[in-house]
Image (tube, rainbow, N blue to C red):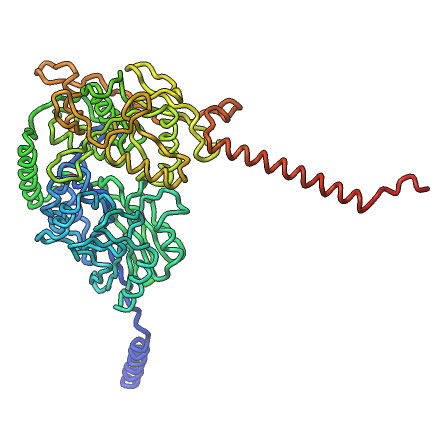
Length: 605
């Protein structure tokens, strides 16, 4: 009996074992981690900011960036950047040496997409930067090429754990220049996707740099709608981080932080293309990498020499501030107010063009970082923005002209209409603000424009008065583009005298002593106008405690709807009136015809 029982149990176990072996093997799902950034702007050092609790914190900088990336790595991690990594702060002066590209490779980046700011340099600097003999990440860009370099790769296939990841890069803004070739991004992206699929990519990522702000015109949305096979798009040059990945058709879309203060982290299940929560991790100074700190220190030594070559002490105290200033990219920013006031004040230091005060204009994205709390040096001023795009210069040269009040109104229309559609058309303004009514027609939404004639007095702009204007070279490009896009309805004229008889000069402004005016020159002179503190250094204490609101909406009423109606607005109203008159005439003609075809039978009985 015992032997029979043992044989029965043994047979039962054999049957169970064979059944288990016959079960299908369930493959373990594959996942990868994607760490991504954008808008680093070559910020070597951390910047000061106020956190949500009102405490001063430091964030950003390459040493902290490298340490933060290292802390986020797992066995299958890709580190990517979606553009604007090199230009905007003082380190841009080292572009020709490929310094930022080398630092990004050291920080662990696998692939990077250039943004339009990374093409801001003159041709010689551009070629030197891309061709620099340094170790650099893969540079991915499929729809732009420049002469004398072949560093751009349309796409790249990388192994991430046991997953073959295909990466391609495009950006939307057409670049101009004899040495630059631009291709429409949709077809370039479609070609890349087909090639990556043919190469055996398990997962395809599109790096997309797009300054469009409206969802209907964003390149990432167009790509996801028109091209099959893209699993994920990382979008650069956007103003807002995405709280979670959004899905358009079969493509996940995330925005990188535009200010380079946070690192995006996205975990993806490759086999079912399921993206988890998109997290944004603050770049933590406490995680600063020692090796990167040494590399940054070496880069800053080279940067200081570039200042000394221009006869400027990079670290000497020019002035001192008394609080943490806000980022110039925020809606209200005391940093932006300070910079633009300094540009306006430059007008008083030249004698060729008379005038009591000046309005100032710069491209909004030319301003990068906040003014520091405490000591202000030339190096720190250059880090706030307006860096020169030409070798041999530290910051942007300044230009001067006169402009009619009616054209100041057009400039505000450009800032509001075009700027709300595309970040590259937004303007930073000094001594000027305006009101709008959204219910008015496009290109006719600005109600009133105000200029600050004294520290406390704002006056309404008169259309026929000529106002002094200080501006950067970038502003000229913004105005020319807006005129072309609006079919000349927003054409602006700049003059060399306050009577509108001379054309504006193309040469930068000159100071009384003959020196060329630049942003750094204007900021230094402006700080020198403030009283000295106890340490004999010019102090901004008590100033810029309130920020100027550039745009204010007004209530709907008859006056606000029709006041200062533009030529375009009157043409539209006249068109509507003519259409109504024609409609009435047509209706009268039809009524007359109907009456003759169907005469009244009344009274026949």
